[in-house]
Length: 319
Image 1 (cartoon, one colour):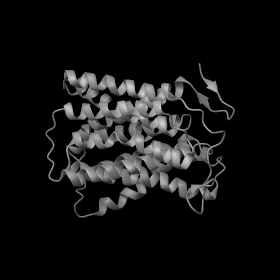
Image 2: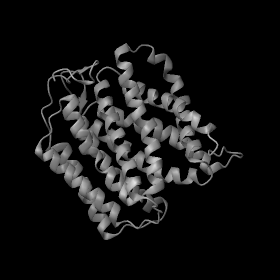
Image 3: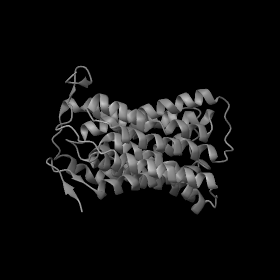
Image 4: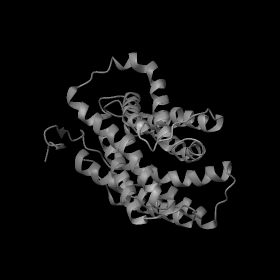
């Protein structure tokens, strides 16, 4: 049963279910991307998913006019959207050109700790030792899962690729914290739409680059994959994630990210016919246990109010 706190925000199973569904959708994006990249240039795919999501959000524009927009929040909305999807997608794509998926997975598992540090620094969220223990277990499980998989990716410069992936995780952490800062005043649907619109504008110039190969024909399966990415991933997954983050501490919400490699392996097994090793089963259990501990065992008593950020310094006003 859902509970409502003093600020009218729900807590309980619904935010958790939203976060789990967001992780499942994001995990499915790897299959969709693989199908889309077979026939279309990566920048065409990324812009296509943003543009399709933007079209879906057009029907909600009239309702957005009712939102009490504060001009001082514009820069935080821009920070949120520039961090993700804009810069995140750029650095993630570059990372996969130079490093292996297993090494990138290890770097990805560092995001929850990055978010916890930023949330403690800028939002005033308290992080207990048990929460960090759960994060540690989830990170260890995600790394174990990545290393136990057999990868055939070519890695010409793993160090450079891992640096790109780490920068992508910093962008993702900045996105989560800025989203949490804005969630008290703006609905998740509006913030997801803002990401899609800005992402479309950001990635459109990439279509004009000489190295971008524009499509010359319509190919059904890759085209449907782009539609899936735009509707169910760019729109759906981010909407579910934004809803979850708006109702649980950002540091705990970030712990669910470690479920993505687990769901990815499961979907690959079910859809692509791949099999899991015994070590991958154990790693998956470890990730799930870590997320549960960080979510329920590490409950913290949140501060009465979110620490406001001083617009002139981008730091908590209490500092």
